[in-house]
Amino acid sequence: MKAAVVYGADDIRIEDYADPVAGPGEVVVATKVAGICGKDVKTMLGEGLTGDLPAVLGHDISGEISEIGDGVQGFSVGDPVAVYPMAVCGKCHYCRQKRYNLCEKSLGIGHGLDGAFAEYVRIPKEIIDVGGLIQLGDEISFEDAVMVEPLSCTFAAARANRIKEGQTVLIIGGGSMGLMHLKTAKWSGCEVIVADIVDMRLAMAGQMGADHLVNSASGNLHDEVMRITEGRGADVVIISIGIPDVIEDSLKLVARGGVCNIFGAAPDTEVKIDPRWLHHQEITLTGTYASTPADFKKCLQLIKEEAIIVSDLISHRFTLDTFAEAVESAKSLEMVRGIITVGEMVSVSF
Image (cartoon, rainbow, N blue to C red; front, side, top):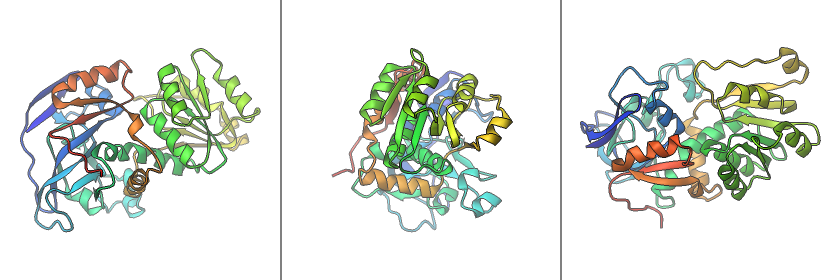
């Protein structure tokens, strides 16, 4: 099969790669659409590269089942599916609490297991056993289905942040994940402020329903947030940018009794926090990572029902043959959310 294979930092080659085979309890999915996550791009550029190279990245995938291993029930070859990408053990302390995203032994598609930037992907038994292989039916396209995983990560954050109707939510960073946080917060009935330094991203946030837009490069974000919230600060602040100075400055924008969520951070990032402020203001500081199968299924249903629209997040489309262009677009910040289409694209949406 054809795959985008990572050999090292900024060394990605489109080449023939061994076809996966479905073992007992496994399936193979023929990729239709693979999503390009910011984490994928950072990894390809050398940040957090695994020592087990060469490897195929990509953890957002929708496609059709092409092979079924012994013992797999309820699926047929040709079924359109979306895939929860974490292969969890199902037995550790966290899995027993259904906090699968914190599994002590998990691997993932594109993270220890060959990923979605390929014509075929093996889906291990661990993903199927936890309900992570989900039939799409005919209500959703492959393009929309590949957006379920990133959207589910923002739902996991909303859960941790205890977001509820009527709150003011400040989102720092208007990239693809920031925009998904926006959609999640608006679906939850919140007033939303989006801050970024790129006017194009702010314009997209406005089109997607943001109530307030702040260019933090040309304006004073602190003053704007305090003006909008009548001096209180935001009930929930979601920091979708892993820059230490930005994180520290954003902490000051949380209202008393509010929640601050660090959604992304660079490796070895350190920030300073005043414990007296945390104590006296009763601030809850959270971090969230990935999502659970329950979050994934919830978001798939919301997209099917068009309760949340995700098609407007896709700004660029590529193929495996134009994969290098996808990486360059991501590096230049031109891309909001890019996808890789593989093979003949036939929508399952009617």
